[in-house]
Length: 184
Image (cartoon, rainbow, N blue to C red; front, top):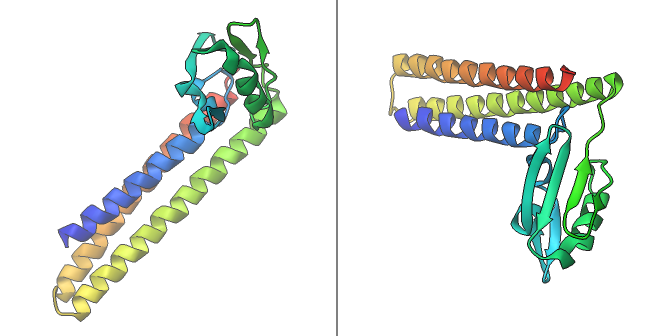
């Protein structure tokens, strides 16, 4: 039974990590280097993340500066940023690329908060699905006489506690991100 708990906990933990990763890509009011994590640049024929072809810094809350290790990479990096969905037009001085993030409008903040809620809801659905799988595993164990009826009830209660804990964590992560988006 402990293996069932451990597997469910591990899968639910991975779901939380995916949620955190997805939310890191959502632009709140400040510039965050993680916004560029999903953008790939052609580096000698290989798709490479921007953070592996240059240094990304945030000298000011609304500014990202990308310093490519090879200045000839600037046009390729700018092209990929333009093609991406972050909605920022890069500018360069021949040495570095600057991304200036404008202030978010109230309407855009509300849209982003809805997106965050949607990600949270998807994570909760995934966690409930993991709970269902774990409970089915316990029922199969009961059917195969590996555990008793009492063990099954104890197991289902334990799985529910694990599920409730992870759903609470999802709510906290979503609430924190929404707060970050809505602050001016």
